[in-house]
Image (cartoon, rainbow, N blue to C red; front, top):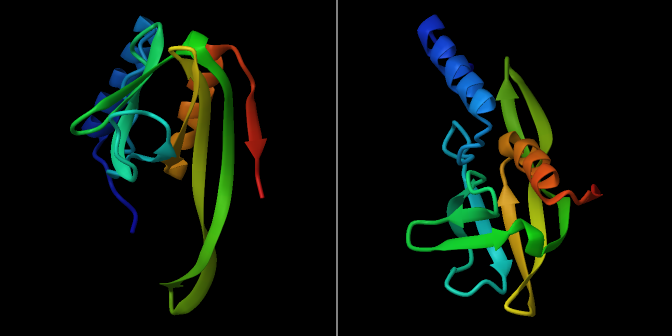
Length: 152
């Protein structure tokens, strides 16, 4: 279904985005439809796997992934590499206008390799399609390192 917005809502959203750009602030990124990022695996202490949360790039020194009960803070200087990949899942059937369509559902994964307290660490996140591009662009800008893309 197509979601309709009023002109006032659109202007408010545009104004908020403009203010964030003018101030140089990148707010916490959460999809507008409620799809958040998920911490799927890694060696981060204090975070459970398969928990949802949001990325925040407000801190000039580090990216933060916040969940309900914990937060993972990764300093940009400590990040060694960032990789992005997609995996195909089973097909999903949808009906539209009396026709059945098959589309493959893709999951998008972000892997961050970093060093903390002299030990190599890793973190794997699942991103929604709507937010992945913004997160990748911001990470590339803040770390100064290219992102390795693995599209299958």
